[in-house]
Length: 78
Image (cartoon, rainbow, N blue to C red; front, side, top):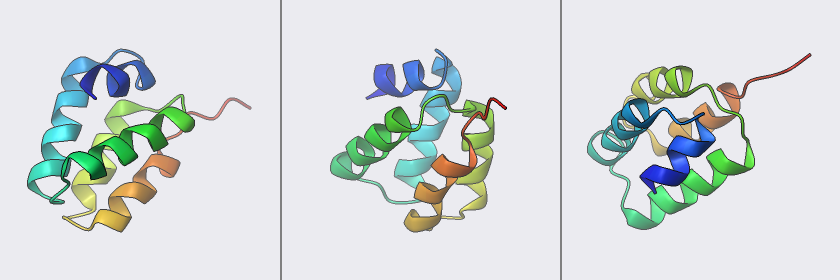
C-alpha cells in the first residue's frame, strides 16, 4: 500500500508513511479501509501529498472526513 500511495503522491514516501500512520492511529483504519483509501487516492491522481496529510490531521479521527481529504488534495491543472 505504501508503494501505491507514494506513486499516487508523486513518490513522496515519507509523507505517505505519515499519512498511513495517521489513518491507522487517529482514524482507526484497518487494512481494508487503507486499501479502499489508497484506491481512491490512485483514482484521483495527482494528489498533493502534503495537503492530503494536513487535511487528514484536520479530520481529527473522523473516517468520512479523511476520505473527503482526497478530493480536496487533488492537483488541479487549469
